[in-house]
Length: 551
Image (cartoon, rainbow, N blue to C red; front, side):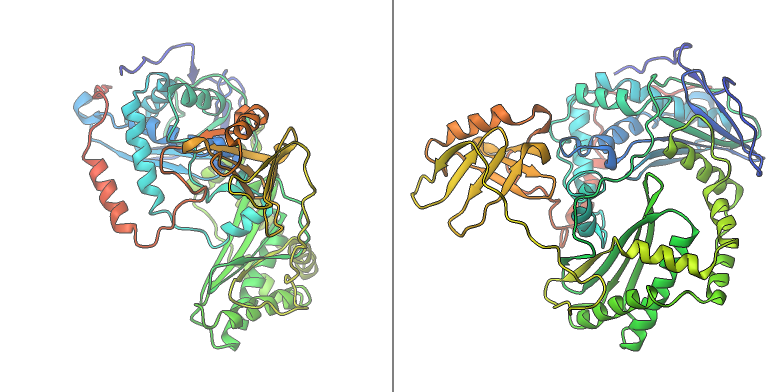
């Protein structure tokens, strides 16, 4: 598959279509005529460039799950160019793509020619996916499948799914459903939608401002969306695995919420020590989720036996955090311990903030500098107010084999609601009994003999899985799955035909033979097999060789 040459009518990072004043650390900002935003930090030494696109798992619908990851892998293969052979220059550091739910970033370090060639090859690869070979797609899909076996599971993914449903941040643990059936046309559509000049930011540190031709497509900037939340009775709890206790909350991003979560972490450690659980593994994470919001998360891994004590520790810590203001001395210590990033890290912060808000104007200050400014004016009462507000949206993960005592914060279960009967055609079971299947223009519902009624409405459906034998599985945003197996119902093929007629075409996901679960498979005991798979894939060369690039 020959690489296209860089066309002069595409983006030129050296153009100065809209320069802005530099920030307090000397970062200069500009934009090309196609909208590629550029941030340059004058610095000696090697050139470092970070090209980031504002797209990630949070932007995918369930039928599109995995497209960003697959595009990233395929495009990255184009960067494996023979720089040393082309111009006699030594190969330099090229970091693999770093993907998060909101962005994909590629970073290169070296002399200017090497860095430029890497990024040009990357952009050419994105523009060439229309010509990608099926075996190349299959090869990278195999790598993605092997990597999934090694990916650690977050302690609070179940809470994210409970809060957001199977969309955006709530679908991070689902399998990459779109990968097995992805083809060149689907990949090209995804690139044209997301991997464009206007939806990217190029951050460069080096002696000279970049003057490179980057063949990116035209498009529009897409700011990071605010997360969508399901209707919940808050505070609420979710059952989880044995030995794990976790709590998450949403808050406006700022020093008050971050200081409050630091104080909650401190109190949780104190409560664990009191109960003899000082050795328990405690995780804390603050994640920007778009829309000016952050997700605050804390998890305790105490093992099955002391899980009840760990639960009490977390719940007592939240009760204290909502009633005991952070002492001024502790607030001062938190503020003084805020890290001061080096200039390159600050450049990345500025570029990431610019990317996520999607505007033409760059941010006035780096996020961490703004945080330090807020911290200097912060009062304990501000922290208490912010923490109370955040915990008002709190979700608690409780081990399924532990009883959460009543009356403590974050222990109110969401009240289940009965599903109203849906209108539509009715089918009876092939083996008799009182079970009924209803399929119509509103949705799909099964009335089981035990009285349960799993329901998926088309207005809230996120995927329609096509399995072998004509089986359909309609997945609701809440995670409810309604399976329609034609062999189970009298005249079942007719029911499937009606379902297909009403199902939105954009939700259909054909599954390969043998696929059965929406969730990623359990990874216990599969690490050795996954590592072996990755090693085997690394030795297989697929597709046509890439020509080396000269200076």
